[in-house]
Length: 360
Image (cartoon, rainbow, N blue to C red; front, top):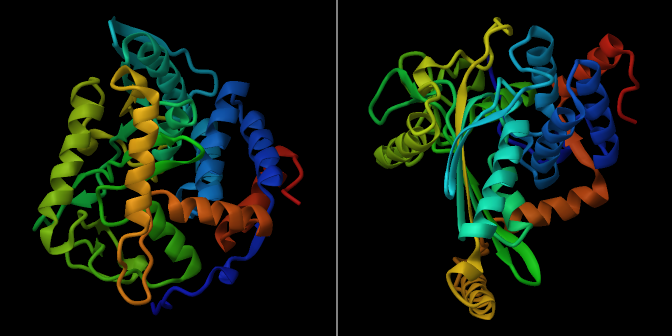
């Protein structure tokens, strides 16, 4: 099957306002049995991604989340329990909650500890897919704290020089408040690309970049329809991405008692009745526990000003982590959020299934 090289955003089937997509998602999740906190958390996470241009983890995940709720994989009304609590550290059993419901709750708990101790860390087990990790790190930065968020996932990424799936995409996200400006925001998979981007490119019939994904024999391919596994971040130096994925595994799985990536049932599998026991880890730091607030603000300002004004290659532009996303968020606020063709079709099916109006 031939595929096209990426083309500009107008190839997307349609655009919707954030408000319309939010209303539709909450209505659909509620109709599928989610309680208010779950519907709002899942929607908040999806819209974070769609708003910032991370379409692979945005509103296109709604159909999958509904199937997970309908099948019983995800508990619509989870019973979440803090099973260990030791000073600035805790472990949350999410009770098969939606990953966003668990991660936002865990970050709230970590922030409360950071307010008291200067640092708060919460491990999460018995959770599920939580979308873009940056949503949870950003939740800390928006309240004046530094935030970190990790999560493991089912095996989709080969090891360096490997020819079989081993780690999940195992993202790392970090965010820091910037007084008077948008937060510094880093959100990255430890694979070369996230698997949801492969699925998005299949929907759009776009060709993948070179050396980011492999077929079933571990050979790199640019055809998204042939992809069986992802390459670790780093290309020829993929041992770095594989090592970072292992670091996320340590925090998200081994420290929390959750399943290792290669033991997690696949996200896209047909069995939507079996809980996946995905692990995650969030951390919050209070800047003024380390130094005076004015010193922190001055340091961030000087760092970011120097970074953005450093010399760029001809035709290039130096950006800080998050700059591209905030710029895209402003653009989408004006133009609307683009939705790929498969998701447009899914909206119609969802609307009919639950008896709700599709987004305008």
